[in-house]
Image (cartoon, rainbow, N blue to C red; front, side, top):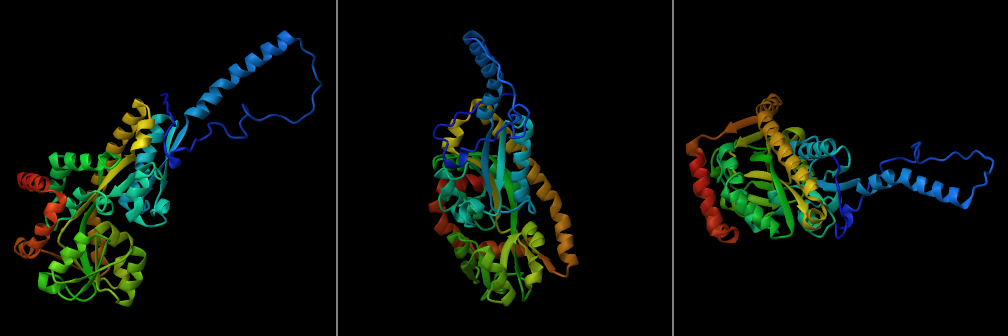
Length: 375
C-alpha cells in the first residue's frame, strides 16, 4: 500500500517524519576503509552519478512519504480510554505497512497535564489527533454538554441511540464547525458516585457531602441541585483530598474506580446510578486532515471506527468483572431501582431548564426522542 502525504499547513505537531532506514542500514552506511582512487572519464562519471541517483531515489521517496502523527489521550493504556488510542495506532501502522504511524501521548502530556486545554491545542495545531472526552471538550463545543445532562441516558442502548443517530450527527457537525474533524466514537462509560461515609440511595443522602467533580459548570449545577457541595479539582489533587477527607466523595466510571484503586483512599460506598455517560471522540486537526491524501483519510477514519467499536465492546464486557473485583475489596455497592432513580431525575430538572438553551433546544429534543425510541 502506498500512502502519499503533503505537508503544507500541517501544523507544528504533524511535521514528524520517520526515517525508513537507520544510520546502520547497509543502503546508507559507508565504510571508512581507504581505497585506491580510480580515474574516470567525464562520461563514465556522469553515468555513475545517474546510476547512484537512481539507486537512492526509492529511499529518498520512502523517507518523504513516511509520516508520524501525534495522538493525545488523557488516560494511559491501563484504562480502556488509553487502550482505544493504542489500538488505533496499532491498526494504522498495520494497514499502512508502517508508512503512516501514530505516536500516542497519554496523561495529557501534550498540554502539560491540563486535559481541559486539549481541544484548543488540537485546534491550534499543537496536537494532530486525539481520542478525547465530551466532558473535556464541552467548554469549546457547548453541544457536547448533551451527554452530561443528568439521567438522560439510562442504559447502553440509549447511548448508542444518540451517538449513532441524528443527535450524534449534529454533535459531529458542531465539532467540525470549530476546526476539528470528528472521525468515530469511543466510550469512557457511565459515571457512578462514591463516598466515604454512607450509602447514597436518595438525594437527601447527598446533602452536605463535598463531592469532587470535573471542571464543568454543568457538573457543579447537577450536584448543587442534589444538595451536595461540589468541589472542582484536578485528579492529581483529588486523590490526596480524598485521602485526608478534605472531600467526601467523587464520581467516575467503574474502570477508573477499579484501576485507580479509589477504594484505597477511603471510598467505601459506591452507588450505581448511571447519572451521565462520557462518550469518547476520535478526531483530527483540520489542517492535518486536509494535508492527507484521500487514501490516508479513509485509512484513519476506518481504523478509528474499528478501534472505537473494539474499545466500546471491551469496556462494556469488562464492567461485570470490575464490579465483582470492587465488591471483593470490601466496597459497599448500591444499585438504585427505578423508583429511586426517579427521585434523582425529579431533583435535577432545574439543570435541564438552565442548560437546554445553551446546548440547543432542538438537539435536546432530538436526543430525548431517540432515547425514548431505544427503550
